[in-house]
Image (tube, rainbow, N blue to C red; front, side):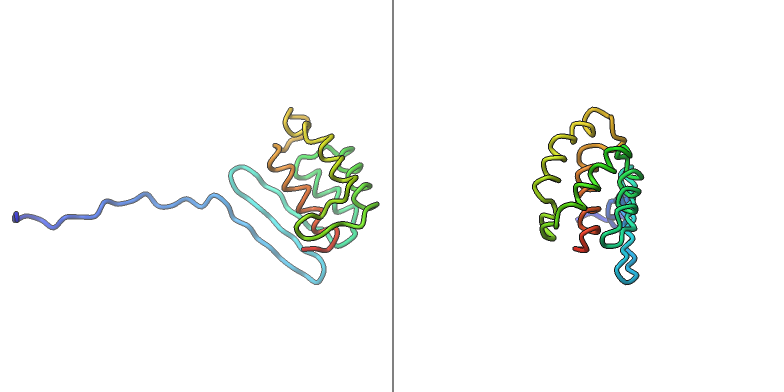
Length: 128
């Protein structure tokens, strides 16, 4: 045993918050804002609101003609479930177009684009 000042614990750097999500529900309208790691997107889509659906996709970086095309497909299908909202045509469209996220045609990367398409569809169909 030695005599001297008490040992001090090493000070850790404070944790950094990398993602903040806000969700506001007003009746059947859900507004979600997600900010983190450079990704920012917001949903304000009522069930069946195709215009809001397109606007949300465009705001998230999906090209407007693609957003409009996808909205028509989603509107033409019934919608699956909370875990899988897409019908066969929507799935086929995503497979055919996701390379636009990979090659930079869309202003959203693949992970963000997939998440945005899914979240928007969930809200359009009223699953969230």
